[in-house]
Amino acid sequence: MSSRSSASSPDIDALARDLRASSRAALARAITLVESRRADHQAAARELVQALLPQTGHAIRVGITGSPGVGKSTTIDALGMYLIAHGHKVAVLAVDPSSARTGGSILGDKTRMARLAHADHAFIRPSPASGTLGGVAAKTREAMLLCEAAGFDIILVETVGIGQSETAVCDMTDFFLALMLPGGGDELQGIKKGLVELADMIAINKADGDNLKRANITAADYRGALHLLAPRSEHWHPPVVTYSAMTGKGIAELWQKIIEHRKAMTASGEFAQRRREQQVKWMWSMLEQRLMARLRTDAAIRGKVRKLEAEVAGGHIAPAVAAEQLAEMLQ
Ligand code: GDP
Image (cartoon, rainbow, N blue to C red; front, side):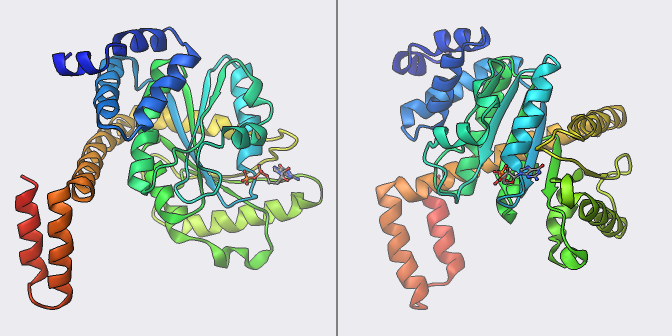
């Protein structure tokens, strides 16, 4: 596009071409470019994503959350293999700004999803290891677009069960799936209202062996809890299902619900609306990222920030006045 970016990154056209041709190596390189903090890489990444935009948007984007040990990786492995057997191409991404498993532990994720890791029609990428949740989420969103352009028609975005990252993943996906464990009768006291409100479906995993009965009781409890909440959409009442990622029982039904949701949302127009709203939200979040990055990296601004912080802390200058002075420097 611009002469500046084509001069600094002459391989963008080739990268876009290889990626459209479903080259996994090109996809991996493109995501690395998106994740890079270097300004020239970021400019190149923007150009790449813009060039690929027409090839994006067609995938089913599913967010999956649940506490550690609930069975996220086992579920993604089972669901992914099921989808591949039905002719799909599945990309698995993660948003996990906190975990020790970030920092590029591809190996970790590959052992976590043992079968999928070796499947030709799967692509697994761990969470970007960037600091802030906003940064991690932004990179994952772009990685998702790259996966779509490379021909992956189902994107599974995994996150651990901590509040903020769940909202971020919900904001970038079409369907948000909350995984739960079979519990005792009073388990629901631990229900996180916020999460249940975000979920398009609650799925109780490990409904096998001795757990079966408890799983059914837990499902009934969640159904009761959901009845008390106003549904997010008049066209979709989040179902509660039980399944076993280990045996695979219920995986097909689980996916069927996701397809039903897609159909209902498309028919009502909510699907297109949710995507549009996500795009705009995304723009604002990128803008926020960029402004915050400038606040952190611009030496003059940083100096001023430190000075003003001290003055605000000492009560010498009103926070509003300090904010105004900094805002002026951003122009
Ligand atoms: P994650 O931390 O959420 O990714 O959870 P994992 O997928 O690593 O699973 C945690 C543990 O639960 C592992 O020991 C799995 O073997 C076990 N597990 C996962 N799914 C099932 C299931 O459907 N049934 C049973 N019985 N165990 C399961």
